[in-house]
Length: 279
Image (cartoon, rainbow, N blue to C red):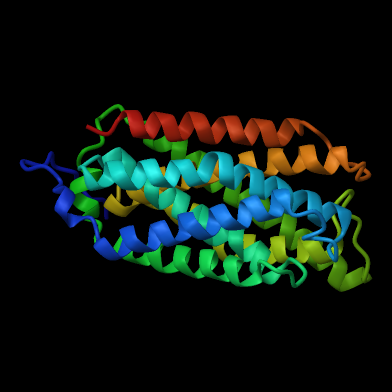
């Protein structure tokens, strides 16, 4: 059964923005800023991690500090003033916070900023819950114009979910059968957490968002747009990680990975196309 979207007769009120989500978001901003500056400025913070993991963590620190922290501040303030586009970006960047800081909390070796990483991770989770709880998905979905590239974006999301589900499941089965796995520059310990987070969080989210968008479900429009923002932000994180890993002479690391660049561009184009159709 599909849902027919009807143009709203009243504006989505800025007062519906949750105060809890706003407060928690600025907790995320503060913790993420401290963590990112510390990771970039404190020599040896990630000493106990492998060179591959250290490059990934420091690349994440750079992307978070330069892109995500300013983006969260701008999106939150604009959403409070009534911007629907900003509200969707806000949700996508909070999703980035959950996914990104899970690596620091569960994957990085214990370090001096552990508690800051926990605060950023936990605050991202509960800010995202509060953001979603106060969202009027039908009213927001009804603001998308008839020329919204619904099917193209749905295919992108389902396609990305299918590719990563296939790759990580195949690799996991190979390891289960042979006890060995070659992952190029990446370490098995580091990729274990990637497999876990992608298969449990990222893959289902993108698959559900894509299917719901294809079927014109109100939450499909919201989730798909936020996931495109998340995807673009995290692909930028991976690009930065590649630069740090290459500079550290990690075997197999690339400054520019063609596949990663293509996925980054696809998410930017898809996210921009969705946001442009919001009236």
